Structure formats: structure tokens, C-alpha cells
Image 1 (tube, rainbow, N blue to C red):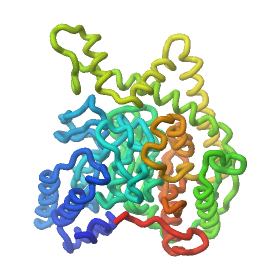
Image 2 (image 1 turned 90 degrees about the vertical axis):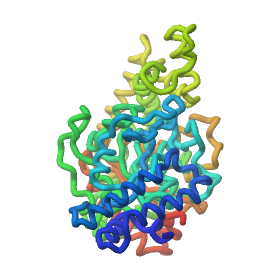
Image 3 (image 1 turned 45 degrees about the vertical axis):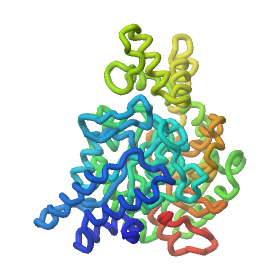
Image 4 (image 1 turned 180 degrees about the vertical axis):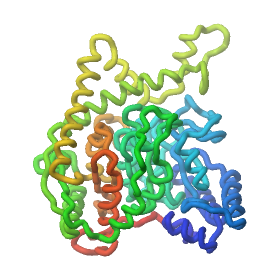
Length: 505
């Protein structure tokens, strides 16, 4: 059973299809592991063992009857608690939604059910996806499986800890400013932020509607590609959904694993850890990044520096745009329609009940961002703050567009640092926000970006980010898979020294 929880999802799918193991056996192995380990990790907010086993047994029965099943059928999965799931508690990490059981499925949850995946549970997260460490959850702190005194990244830290800790073979996270890629980087996983609009947002509890995007977190590039294919595609229920064919992502990963990147033009972003822009970056992170760029060259890629000046403004622009949209989106949590209601004793009017509900239901970081966003949108300040931030966003998009004339992908570190100690940045919001320094430009421009492990610094994982033009997600997977294969072949070589393990088990 221990071997099952350290096996890649694609291999689990092969074993299930071949009848070498049953979905119930795989699911039970993961549930046993969750019971044994999650008390220390805090990866899950809700685990429904009975429902998971029931789903697994249904897959086994369909397979026994000769039913035509897909490659994901019977493979367990963890969902970030921001994904609405019918009948399953969904809180977005907030007390204001404690106990809420949605009456419908998010589109991606419905697609995963159709694919036959087995839902293990809902993972912990920073409240309403606001944070970079999963310390802002209203329920518990999640720990990094590599070092329980360190954070697992955020806001999808529950998903990253579950996969890295062997409590799920793969998971869904959401990325607003880096919340898939950054936790993947600090826990030694692969994490991909899809092109904005290529994965439905219908049924994702909104933080920042022009930025939020769901995507896969996995132990291998191929696993991430398979999961991404299952959730991608146009959705008429989402007004921002792109009506465009889903690229063949798994095949791109398989081609990339062959290791030939001849002719690929790679741009190293100077503003993201390049010459003269290294303040705030760990030296070990910069060293692993440089080694990985050298590895790309050894695979035939043409590497050159690329300057994207507006990237230096991504951090302040994001922290005006995202809180502004959050202040609007979170206005619906008023203590009237659903969720927590405080002070409704017949002696208070609606405004008092709403104020008491929001005071007790929202945590400090959510309140901070609501206040900031409301101020930025207020009369007399809209043009000076939100309007200016949107202009910067346009400049960042133009920098990407200009870069694509000369290169096929852009690369950088995923996170400026390795995982920091729990509590180290709780009282320093600016230091916490700086964790997203490298991931924000791709989020603001809506282009795809993937983080792939590239070695260790201080004994902790480092992530390498690959960005591609909009709808060229397959390019991210191809390059990431080539790096992954080369790293595995070069284990102990001058390029990498040590490599992150596939699982903390």
C-alpha cells in the first residue's frame, strides 16, 4: 500500500487499466496515509472516506463490466477548498462559509467526476486565496512536508502539501498571482497556471475575477498535463471562457521528455533575478536557476537575456487590482443569503448584522485587502490607483508581446526564496507579498506559466518558471518535460547536485 502512495498518477492509471490494482485499493491506501500523516501536515480541511470509497468501488464495477473508462478513472484527487462541490463542505478557508454545502458542482469538478477521478477531500488554503503561505486559513496552518517548521506556500498550500506529502497523487489548485506555481516551487512539485480563460472559472469562489485560474499540481510534468487536459475547454457557463480547442498537452509532455530542444529560443528575464535585479533573491535560488538555464542550452536551446521593464511594476499593480476586485466580489458575503450570520436577534437592523457578520467571519488579511481595494475604487482615487494599475497591466502585456517576437519562452525563478519558517512573515505583509514577485507578470498578462523543480537550496526545493504565449500551454509542458527528463538523467551531475524527491514519503 505504501508503494501506491508514492506512484505517479499516470502509472496508477496504467495499473488500474491493466487490472493490477483496484481503485478501492488505491483509495484506501491514500485514506490510510491521510489518517496517519495529516494530523501533522494539516493539508486537508475535509476528508469524506465513505464517499471516496464508494466512488472507487463504482469505478471498479464499471471496469469489471467492460466499461470504456478514461486514463484518470479511479485515480484519487484532492481539490482546493475554493472549488464548489455539490454536497461537500466548501469554505474557501473562511469562517464566513463554515459548514456550507453547495447545491451544485463547479464545471471543473463536474468534468473530473465525468473522468472518473475519486475525490479524497478538500484541501486547506489561505482564506479566499489571499496569501502566500496558507497561514491565513481560518482553520489550521498547513506544514511543508520537507520541513514541518516551514510553510508549504500559498494560497494552494493544502494542495501542495497533500501531493508532496504523499496524501494525494495530484491536486487542483488556483492561481491568482502565483498560488499554484509558488507552492509547487517550495514543495518540489510541478504546478501549471493555464492561459486565462482556458479552464472554466464557473463554480470557483472568486477572489479576483480577471486573474483567478484553476490548474494542476502534480509530481511529474506528464501527470500535470493529463490533469490539465481533463479540466480544460470552453464552458458556456463562464463568460470569460475561451472557445478554443484544448492543446494536446500530454503528448507535448511526452515529446518533451525525449529531450530535444534544438532551435527553441529561451529568454531569461533580466528583471526577475537577472543582472542588477537580485535584491531579495536567495543566492541558492539564483544558482539553481543559472544551472537550469545551462541545462536548457545543453539540450539545444538558444538562450539570450530579455528585458521586460514593466515587470518591475507588477507587484504594486497586482496589489491594487486584486484587492479592488476582491472588495467587489466579497460584498456578497453579507450574512443574509448564505454562510455565517451574526447578531440576528431581532433587535438589530440589517447594517448591524452585516457588520457583525463580516467582522467575525473575515480574517485579518481578507479585511486588509477589502479595505485597500475599497479605497482604491473610491471616488477621487479610482483613476489615481486602480486606473493606473490597469495601465501598468497593459504595459506588462506589451512587454510579453514584444518578447515573443524574439523568443519562444521566457524563464525565471518561480519564487525568490525557498520556503520560509512558519510565522516568519505573518506580521510583515510586504515581505509576504514579495513571494509572488516572479509569478505576477504572467498572471497579469493572462499567459500560461509552469513551475518545475530544479534542485535544492539549503536542503529545500527550488522551482524554475517557464512562461509561454497565450494558448501555448503545450509549449510550457514540452520544455518542462525536457528539463525533468534531463534532471533525472543528470542526477548528481554538475547541473543540479541534489534533486527534489518526487514525494516526501
